Picture (spheres, rainbow, N blue to C red):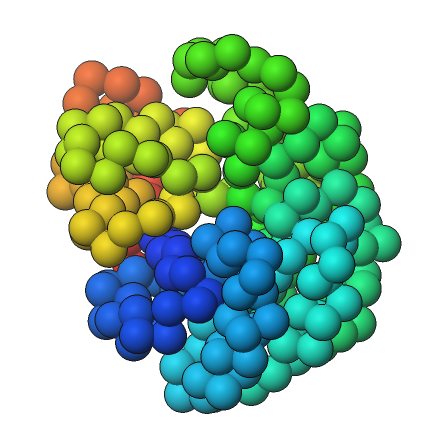
Length: 268
């Protein structure tokens, strides 16, 4: 994934709340997403855009979630895409590569398509391969609404999550970003959500409150146990000099070595 940063936690902040922008930057998230879409009511769209434009500076780069292409605010939002301080652009309701091309042509340095509709799932491969795409993001809540899923469980969303992981791998872009956990004060649920996302091959998660950031950062990083295992595997393989070797009673073959190397790269 050339040029794309590793972002474990991506924290949303409402685009009309300039008083929260600096606080969000100080929350410890890998990236801050200034949200001009869901977090801003229609009457406040223009003022939020102007507020963000006045605040933007190269020294505090952020991601901006603009409004979708089907809205009356999309064209005006495009003017912000290449502004100094906008490191990347999140496009909601991402469904077509040509829309991503419009955002890229407006100056976006990187694209994070938010896949949250049936059309987006159907066009995943084309979206993932569009020029400038860093990673895909999963809009689990909006997808459920679009598909008419009633109180869907995580098991029922599993096929869609795995499609994002597969499309990302085939396109050669970074591992995808999981959707939000809405239970802000449920630490156990958040921990479970993060563990599931990482287990499925996601490398980041969207956060809707600063108190979620620490748990996401910790849960998306390799654990001490994983790092110790990876170090043992690589040390044993080096000592064996190409001969067969076992670690913790299990044979070490090439896939195991690659997994150990990936864990240590991610940890560093």
